[in-house]
Length: 275
Image (cartoon, rainbow, N blue to C red; front, side, top):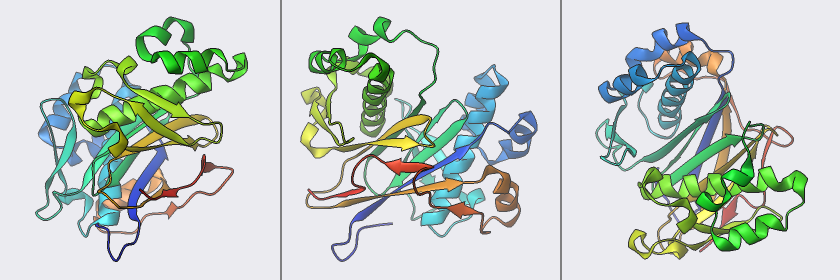
C-alpha cells in the first residue's frame, strides 16, 4: 500500500461495534494473537476489557488483509519498548503501519504506509472535565475551552484528548509525553492542526491531524506523518464483527464491509488534503 502516480496516499480507518460480543468470542479468537498479545490479554481483569482487546486486535488483522494480500492468520504483530505495535510479518508487509483504539462498545484502527496514530472516545462518559483540564490542555487550548458553550465543553475536551492520543501514538511515545505539551488548533468546522509539541519529538508541521465523528456518539482523531509533497486521503469503513468467524474459517474470505456515509459516520471537514 504505497502512493503511486501522484495519487493521494490512503489512510484506511476501520471500526466495529463490539457490544454484542462475549467471553466466548475471546476464547474463539485468542489463538489469532501473538504471544505478547496473549500475555497482555491475560493481564486484563474485566470481561469487557478482554472482549474489546481481542476485537480490536482481530479487526486490525482483517483491515491489514484488505490492503495487503495475506490472510488474517498470516499476520505477526509485535511492539516496541514504548508499547507501539508494529507489523513483523508476513515478509514484505513490514512497511505497513497501524494504530489501534478501543473505548466503550467501539473498536477501531488506522492503517497507512507512513507513521499513523488513531484514537476514539465515547461522548457519554462519567467524569468531571474540570478536574482534568490543567493536566492535559495547553494554555491556548484551555483558553478556547473556557469560551465554549457549557453544553459543548465535553465534546471540545474529548476532541483535544483524542488528537493528543492520536499524535502520541503516531510518534510512538504513548502516555510518556505530557499531554499539556501537545497543543492543537481546532476550528468550528472540525479542521485541526498541530500548534506545538516538544522539539525533541520532531517538527510539529510534519504531522497532519483530523477529527472524526463516528456513529454520532463517538469522537475520534487520526494523526498522519506523510512524506513531503504527499496528499492524504482518509477512507472510513465499518466492519461487521458477526462475520469474523467467516474470515477466520476462510482466511482470505470476503466479509461484509460497507463504507459509511452520513448520518452514520462522517468526517468533520475534508477527507483529503495536500501539503
